[in-house]
Length: 422
Image (cartoon, rainbow, N blue to C red; front, side, top):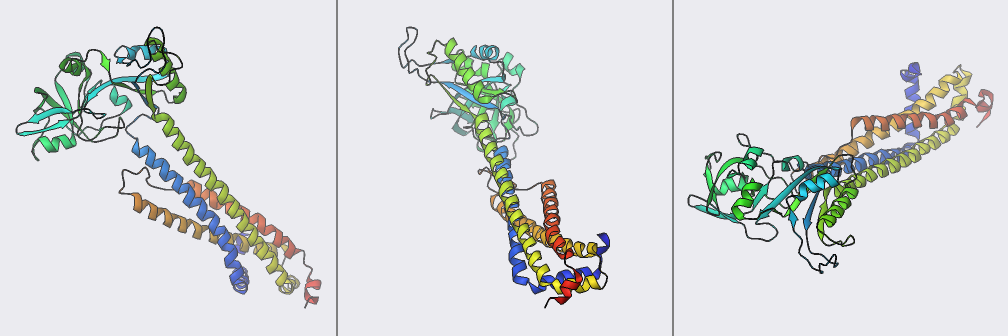
């Protein structure tokens, strides 16, 4: 076969056959080309969706969820309907004991979110209203905070000593400090109390409602300053990677209902948002898109390759006399067979390469259109090289197999019968 590949006569025969049937060959090649094009574009698009969602939530644990208290809807254990529930600090240890699939639980409390009035923050002659969060250092295990160089997030010493320290947002820095001034180590006033700035965080949607002006202080300091006792506004949690986040969410609510004496069937006493479930749904959707692209692409490629086989069968029939003369002049059945198979593989491979180029071009356009849109969950639509090589290998294999049919038909032609044919 390798000798046939480099035989000039072989390629002259192949190109001569293609020139005789230009339109028919072009239409059939487009079928194969379209199959690999669909595979590249759809699988690349699904990967772009996958990448975009991961980028959108790269600062948050994949199996994370958030739980808060609401009002009861069913009377229970002597309590009437509409009881206003309140999460407590000791719910943290209770949940860790009752729900072993939980890896981290971070109590959170805040003012200036969910429509509430923000804290009055001042520095020098500048002031504004900002959201202030009381947090535990463990929060960064669930929703990491990107801190600028030279600063840090809250630590356990801040909690233990109820330090008046804070981590401000990059917009807060711009609004309260001069352009060339380093906020680290300086003080700001939060509701008339001085807090030392220990870090500046870049914006990341860690809790789903945060922004680039938020201020974080230790939870223990927050409850002392605002006299909130052991009240908690909501819990940010993360389950282990192999945990079923939907089941974990149910277990959390069931445990809280027991502790706070809520009817087991009351679905309104505690609200939740399961980011892990959303993430798994999107991952499932992108996987489904990839599987669909694989099925549609392979089916279209197969249809196109079969079309190439049909063209070669017709070509063999039209070249019956020519093949008979070649056989009479000494061409072996193997040489005739190799010529037909090489022609089949050549057409399939050319169609595949063009399809890959066109698909890559479309993905490049999509990437250019979505590259600067950080708010849209879509990024870098690509197809791994190994998948492209596998697709090409599959096409070559199919081209070889389908080429065997017209090749065997050509070999079966007897020289004497071919020479008699007019």
